[in-house]
Amino acid sequence: MPLPLQVKLLTFLDDHVVYPLGSTKGMRVDVRIIAATHRDLQAMVREGRFRQDLLYRLNVVRMHIPPLRERGEDIRLLLDHFLAAFVSDFHKYINGFSKDALQCLLEYSYPGNVRELKDIVEYAVNVCREDTIERHHLPSYLTEARVKLISNLSEAWESKPAENEVSLGMPLEERGADWGEVERRLILKALIKAKGRRHRAAEILGWGRSTLWRKMKQYGLLSSASAESERGEDS
Image (cartoon, rainbow, N blue to C red):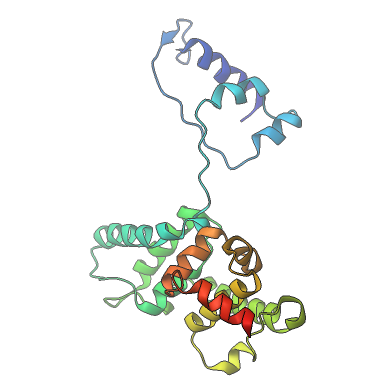
């Protein structure tokens, strides 16, 4: 928002009067203002690009909404919501996502947050000619991102076992296990390294705490994590 416009907004917030375009007579209005941004406004204040008094004026009730990758429990709800909406809009019969496609969608980090998730579902519904969305109906970059993640994890966990003590024992591509089993073992070994501390395990894995909790729940590790960790430390 340009600085001159910031001044006008600040003035409005103080007196609640707006001037219709071309009019010299003000109109008093009673509205509630909701402002949203992904920028660091305090840093912009220090740089002189955002008015400090406007920041104070807007900062009455402040809410921090974490990125979608840290709200893993919301992903499935949003997928189902947008799928139902686009199926209705496009007059298609699609009853859901296949297990493989859903796993890919739940593993993705969504740097574009909800907008990106919505676009992915819209794309899949558009190209799907079956009654279930399969992995090949998803944008190709999702599969590429998953392959890159596997490669990065393989390199990180297997090339330096002396440092992180969470080597899987053999290259991922030679193990023959599906990704879910590989991920489950990564979580267990990270918990062993972190001595059961979930916050530290999440840092080792490069995940948010809520993502780790969701995946532990997905793999049934919430009740057994401590026991697995203790057995690993004994061994």
